[in-house]
Length: 206
Image (cartoon, rainbow, N blue to C red; front, side, top):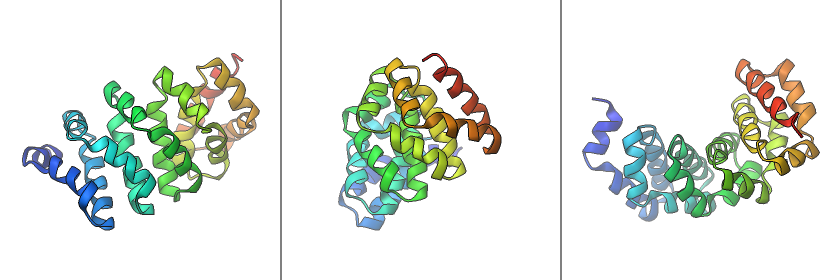
């Protein structure tokens, strides 16, 4: 049996959720990390959300240590992957503006995790508008130049998702994304090159 299944079956999820609220700073970060790993499993995504983790993970984005913020962003990224209900719940809990802050002020790892969370959230049409309204586009574009390779990949996909909205296409271009995406065609990873191509295709409709 997969360890993530065994850990959940042993009753760990509600106990980890409690520690998100009552643990020490280090323990909160570790609990967020454990929940993030467990939430790769489809069934665990549902169980973690049902246990009340989402609001507490969002709170960690604001009040946690630098490490805990990064772990919380990763957990929200995994919880929102291929789960429509969690995507809506995470946005409703106020995660989007806090993830945008993390794009600008977090560690390199946290920035990449925040970009990944916004990537998944940006699949929802309402969230596309909310993400842009929260000021995400400029820091996302900045990461195309200054982020890690992983962050650049996440950002490129996020911008592609956002660019299916006409107003966002205008804003993305105005923020200077186009020359940076073109640069990725030459200098990016294989994944970044592929995603940059798709993003430029979407932007070309504007």
